[in-house]
Image 1 (cartoon, rainbow, N blue to C red):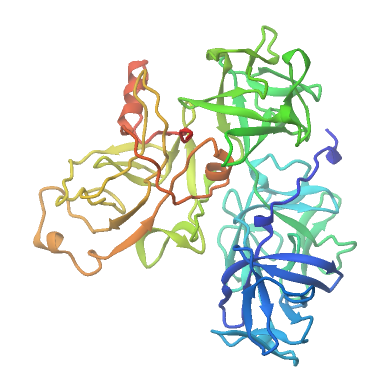
Image 2: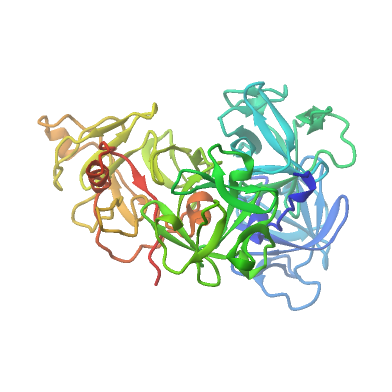
Amino acid sequence: MEEGEWMQRQPKPEDLRVGLISWAGTYLTFETWELLVSNEQETQAVVRLRSLQGLYLLSEGNGSVSYGRPRTSHQGCFLLRFHRNCKWTLQCIITGHYLESDGEDVFCNSRVLSAYHMWAPRPALHVHIILYSPLTHCYARADPTVGRIWVDAPVPCLEECGFLLHFKDGCYHLETSTHYFLSHLDRLVTQPSSQTAFHMQVRPGGLVSLSDGEGGMLYPQGSRLFLGLGSSPVRGQEWFSLQHCPTWVSLKSRARKFVSVFYDVEVCAASERLTPMSLFQFECDHESPTLQLRSANGCYLAQRHHRTVMANGHPMESDTFFRVHWNCGRIILQSSRGRFLGFAANGLLMANATIPGPNEEFGLRLANRPFLVLRGRYGYVGTSSEHDLVQCNMDQPDCIHLLPCRQGIYHFQEWILLVNNILWHLSPLGKVRPQLLYRASREQLAHGVGAQWLLPASRQTWHLVGRQRRHYQRVYLGILGQWDVTHRNLKPPGKTTALIRTGTPESRSTRRLSVIQLFLPSLAQHLFQSTIHHNRPPPRSFCESELVQSRDQGEGGTKTPGCFMFYPEEEG
């Protein structure tokens, strides 16, 4: 496969938004902004700032700053200058005044440039990212075996191409998928420190460069293009396109063969070994039940003549869209012409069946997602050192490591979940341990290792959902809705004391916890892209995760507590 065959998709507008941090550490109106560029040069650009609500930042003649719609062609236009200290200044085109902040209010009434006019841009992109070099047409790839990062991957389908970009104290730390950090010594280290802190220069359109603040710039070097600090980049070597890490999956047939692309266009299930040509980029919209599968050759799967499915489609072709149906951890794909995808006797992928059967079912496995990073409306899901509550408004996330099991089932490692008053725990080593201690009533407490959660029984509760034998259900993954969650330091069963009943001020502290609703078919948007929506799902009947195990036991398997399957939200 030629490197040039993989064509870049245009970034989504929401991935290009930035937050602007003042000298006092506060964000401009606590919002992220879309930059509408009308004229960009090497060191400056003319821009408008548009908010999430579609309103523009306007500078009035009296120096005040407001939201609104521009009344003239130049109102709301600012001259954006890029400074060497990685800061921005915004100068009103009409008045010549600089946008500034006193730590609380924002105004625009001075023509004399000072430190109060400096704004640090912070990309609002999800922290799980990939780095693309427009000059080499390749992606950064971490190699923990030698402790380096190379810029040599033509297609970002590997787990090693994904990075976490952490922001702390005005600097950025680049973490690999195996949780090593890039240091100023061009090596990967185990812990973040001042030697792993980089300054980021940001340009409109998602271009960034990283430096050590002392003249050194990160760029590909040498014949093998290793990523390291240097002082003499040429022809824009230091610039990278910052993009959200895409989702890649593998598909398996009923015969346990990987769906792969052969001879660059033919699609069949004939490989027992996972190769790059067995990986597909999973693209879908959470508002639509359809998806597109993009092969590593840069083209999309599409139905062609004689109902054959080929890997030669283009993004806007209607034949590249497939309706996805979820069935007990497997997926069924229906073409735009109404036929279901299955396999012919020779293994070729065809759109033949009018009614789906076992031959039309595909096993789905995440290919480049060893962990999930969840972000909602108010921030990331994570914990802080101050308390043990899992919060959904964190500036930095906690990684939820995934342990794949059978039939689309994944374990959440090192997480303790309360399911119908039963605590399930999965240790860091991947061994599943059910901690069924006793059934906790509203006034009783369960006991176990680590942080525990007690959902008040007076409210309606939503649980992780499995499935019963011969009874298929739509499943929501996670504890759903918004609930008052209380964390307590618990005593073993049978030793309930007055201290437990009354509690200390710390143990009685209750915070609002907005937790996750992950549903499919919006797989890439919600699970794979780790986005959380805080809408409460419609009421449905639920069963607990034990029912997943009961079916496995009935089929000759063993019980596997802590396993949870991925299913779509029911339409309508």
